[in-house]
Length: 284
Image 1 (tube, one colour):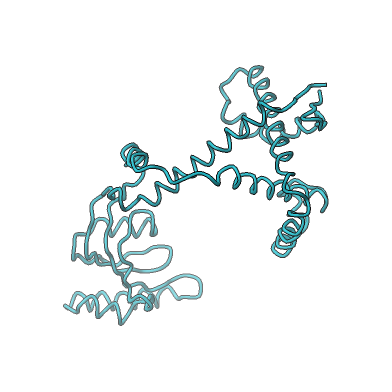
Image 2 (cartoon, helix red, strand yellow):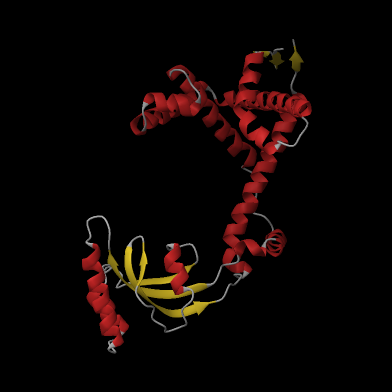
């Protein structure tokens, strides 16, 4: 069954193409739904997607082909510089340059439209920022941190394993003899550009084997020799910070950006609803 949207005919094949596009993720999310109901809803959602895309495309045309033409060609030229033509067609679901131009024109027109719809939006008020902060503190919490430096001798690849171990063992012997860690780092580490200083890290930033050692060291404590996939290490912890939540002032910019994005999405959704309420949509 075809659709006619504001006089523009949309074949059923377009809706079926949208069904195919969203089916994998849709069936994953609604795996426990009754199959018949799931299929019915999938078709309805695909139909609504096609209607909304068509209305956006129609509205976007008000900017005129002459405004978008140069930008479309610039975008296509840039894509062709970075990727193979067939790869571009596959990624944007186009068969040739003409279809590719239409896809890019739709994207650019939608971008212009979104900017127009959202141009009057102001920054969220302070109370909204504070409310978001209070309701989402766990998102801003930083895990435990340690300030650490290490002596590293890379091993594997072109680096000789035994040579690397011999060097790290010599560094370890000097530390056990009372040499200052900072002096030994400077003398032995392969990470000379930072002097072995990594700074504050949280779990997950470094290799798991590294985390397992340094997060179990006390302040001022030096590890034994240990191995990661990169090579041999000796680490020293200089400071520790417990998990903490930053003050609202420290994350205000991040919150404002999030809220403004939500405001833009809501404004665009409302605009699409207005387009749908005014549109003439027929099934034939």
